[in-house]
Image (cartoon, rainbow, N blue to C red):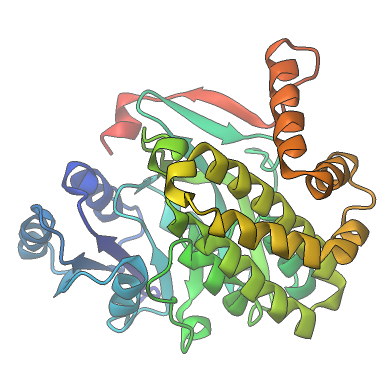
Length: 349
């Protein structure tokens, strides 16, 4: 009997996307799965849709609970996992038909604890694929714990996302997602990867990550700053166990801080007293010596930090000028993301 794979799918206000997600899981070429659908108090038809699927397929379990957020829903789903392996699939995303088969075959072949595939950024009528970080014809990349943690901190090839990976269920035990925060994966991923002895990265895209049309500027709220809290919490963890990654962590915190400072400027009505901007300024100024050391060899980030320390507005002007130069093709856009046509098959899996 092949090993069972448990797939945890939290659901909240995704009635529009849910059928595509569930169908893509049920049509997997690997059949020994259990699908744990967690209705997180969704006010739409998510719960009833899930029950209809459960009535038709015994591999499906449905859990109904009061709304508690994505972390709480995932935690509830993990309590019902009985498979040797676990996956998380967000309910507006979907899988290639052979995704689980490729992941578990790779996992067994390399005796890995976690396997991650490449993925598509899925828009309404096209896909984006990161050719800079992943090569569809490339062979699997094997990482040990130290190289894995470096890649996780950089968040380029190895993503902080919980989804898109197949985990040995045993390594997830005792590591719940933090409740009540956005960007919950940032608080969680490093704790899991610290237990991993062997991690394998598949270059082929097997996961479709839906990109909603909402503008980040229009939808931005101070809750988005949870990502900085997560990065700082991870930083303390790295200081204790991975000292060699501290400078890389500072760079990530700085980049993210500057982005959110600019977003708070654009959304000044949501920070009328400037308290959130002050918190970012105070952190950068308090840690300026360490940040300068971390960005010493990164010319662009070093310039951004220097300008911010003189006056935060200078960094905003610098970023705006660089954007204009890119639009005028005086400097090139960052390479990597390339458009892939989307087929009806991919959208109606």
